[in-house]
Structures are given as C-alpha cells and as structure tokens.
Length: 110
Image (tube, rainbow, N blue to C red; front, side):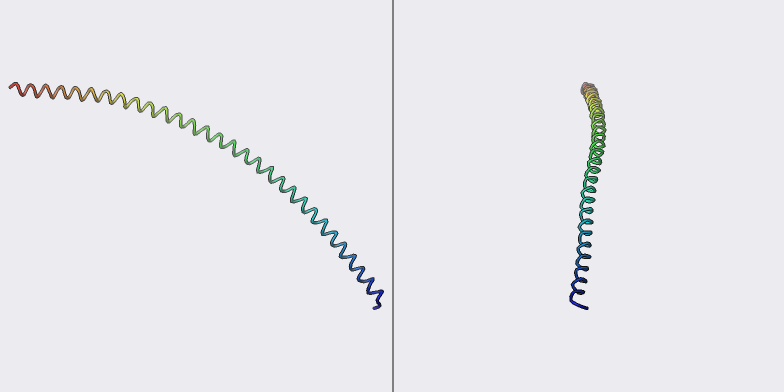
C-alpha cells in the first residue's frame, strides 16, 4: 500500500469518525431535550398532585373541626348534667344529714 493510499484510507476513517461524532452530538442534544421535557412534565404532575393533596387535607381538616365541635358540645352537655347531679347530690346529703340529726335527737331525748 502506498503512502497516498494510506492517507486516503485514514482520511476516510477520519470522515467516518467525524460523522459518528456528529451523530452522537445530535443524539445527546435530543436526549437533553427529552430530559428537559420529562422534567417539565414531572414538575407539572407533581404540582397537580400537590393541589389534590392540599384539597384532600382541607377536607380532612374540615371534618376534624366538625367532629371537634360535636365533641366539645357533647362534653359541655355532660358537664352541665354533672353539675345538676352535684346539686342534687348536695341536697340529698343535706336531707340525710338532717335525718340523722333528727334520729340522734330522738335517741338522746329518751
């Protein structure tokens, strides 16, 4: 093989490598574009999911607030009943004490 043939062969190989490198660069550009598009799509979807979760959390918070209000109202009713029972119990103790005093007084008169 002569020097000219060798140079021509190497130039051909160089052109093949240059074409391959250009193709790889194009593929890398496409890959970068695809990654950017994927990132944008993922961010959009995450924003949608955040909005859904925020809405659901608001609903759950509202339900808990309503339940808390019901519990507070019910406990207030129970406190009022206990207060009435305390008053009745005080009267009952007073009547029993007066009755015992009456029995003791009757026993002492004998």
